[in-house]
Length: 162
Image (tube, rainbow, N blue to C red; front, side, top):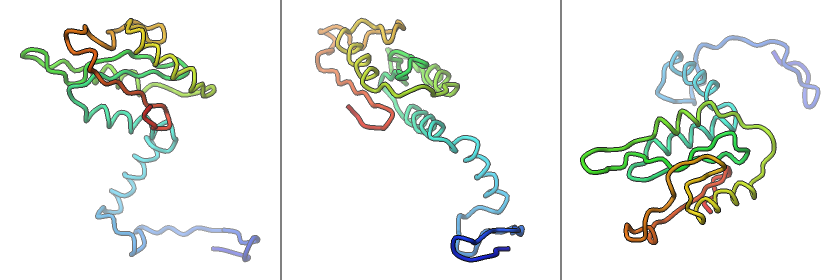
């Protein structure tokens, strides 16, 4: 029930409606729609959760690449890991390693983007395998193995590829 009008309008009571309006067509039942909202609320109600979901979905679709994660506040650091990379007769896949680091991550404390970009840039430039104090594989292999032709990308939290 709504009382008043304009800026003085107030909702004083709500009534239960077991079905969405007729102009909302999702193809889901009422129960499925409630579950869909519960899923959204659980996993996507904050920007951080949306970002985690987007990053995880991208990692899950990749193959024959190496991916690393560097949180600008150093709360998550994972040097490059192989994602569904064929090596000889086997496939090396560290997808679960990355996701196991990504999901529990909780962001907090400032946004030092320049420092984060500098750290990742040094990781590529120095080719030492040390990312934010954490050891891992070098970003590039030997010159003879095509390292000079290898592309590298960095994406900050705003989704811009640098």
